[in-house]
Image (cartoon, rainbow, N blue to C red; front, side, top):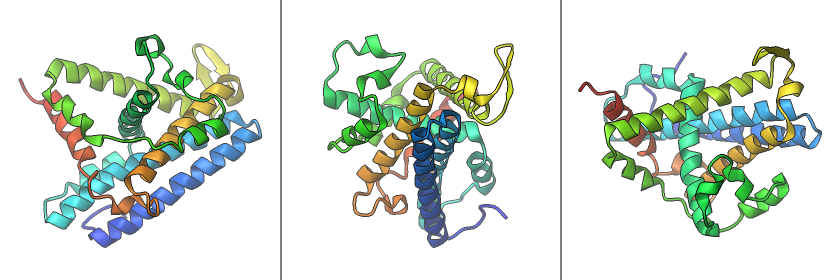
Length: 245
């Protein structure tokens, strides 16, 4: 079975289960991290991120179904099962949130931190979770600004996101399996160190924070109405990038 001809009520139930599973995977990641199982913690955190990455897609489809619009169910099935697509979409979401977080703490000379923005935030996971309790704002429609960029600019940004998604997917696999990496045959514990694991958990925590901001009553993402266009905007950007000249 797959996602096909679903009603809004069905999609809401699916979204809720995906959200709950994402949270459970994040909790597993923290348990493993606290027991110094950094490779497996990294894997669970990335799985959590990919689960979160499904939600904007389903929110968009839910909005389409409720309006009676045509839904490309085949495309939805493919994208929900494509690890790089889910990771790329999650990366875009986290990028918007991190931008808001940095604006909140008023960092000067931000260009000095481009390679590792996480150094701007508390180092330990517990301190980072407390840091996230602040009243951060999320402006999802900042993504609209991208629609005014040239095709060349969008193509460059797209390639960067895809490259990042490929790297993250690579390290997810390396966190589970012994394999070749940069010419050496390695096991996961030789590749996934504590910081790499910690940063993936922080990324998943940021996604959890996004859901809390968008629906503070009970954290259930399936009730969000004002954010369902995020994936549609991403699709419009993809169309602009790949349209025929």
